[in-house]
Image (cartoon, rainbow, N blue to C red):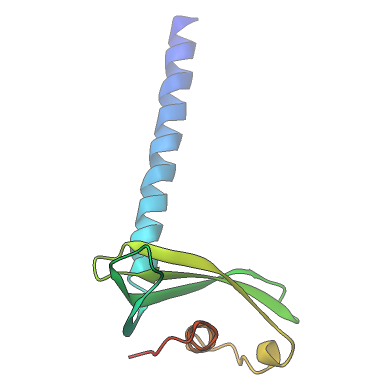
Length: 115
């Protein structure tokens, strides 16, 4: 019975470790998929400036609406500010499926200048 318990704990640890590794790898990959922006102060409490914008789709019904998650990152890749923006109506219809539109749309809503 001891062997079964030890095996179960080892298996659980292995699954947890793999999930953390995949999460970290996904975070690194996503941080490399951001675009440069004109440096901007995100708010009065954060002294560092955001220099990159990361955007990805959280939910898209492939018909009329898409919720996009965004992060404003400093030069080290640290998340200074994040949130979601929903694309609907004509804005969704104008999105031809290219990968540039989410960045330009979110930058426009946040009044950011892409480099």
